[in-house]
Amino acid sequence: PNYVFAHDQIESAAYSLIPEEQRSSWHFEVGKKILNSCDSKEDIERLIFLIADQLNRGKLSITDDAERISLVELNYRAAKKAISSSMFSNASHYLKEGISILEEKHCETHHELWMSLYVSYAETEYCNGNFESAIDTISSIIK
Image (cartoon, rainbow, N blue to C red):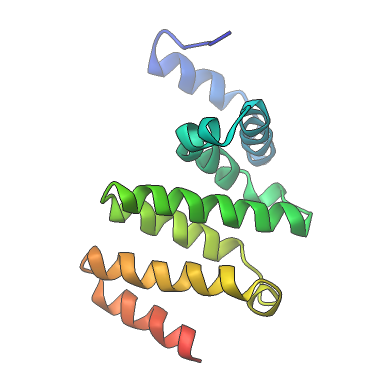
């Protein structure tokens, strides 16, 4: 069943009832439930922005490294989908989220993913006209 609030203010009031320190875990659980309800890759692709947004809002609840990498990969997929629709600002957002989830050790353990995120982020920042950010990102790749 689909549940929809009759008005944005009702949704906002219901959300405000969730204690602030629990919101991250709620978002993470909602994102996982949506992801687990997908029966196919097509379902995931159709809902990828919603899933990534919920999981990103709950990223502080991640304790497992495999979940961390899965979320980074999901953000990368969301960014690629955004790029394919010329939504470079959205793509930058998902790439930046993915980068923020990475830990220093992932540069070595997941180098290809790490490199793909940074290069794509530099490209989308360039497309968005954020040349200084693009240059800074390229510089961090070279170091």
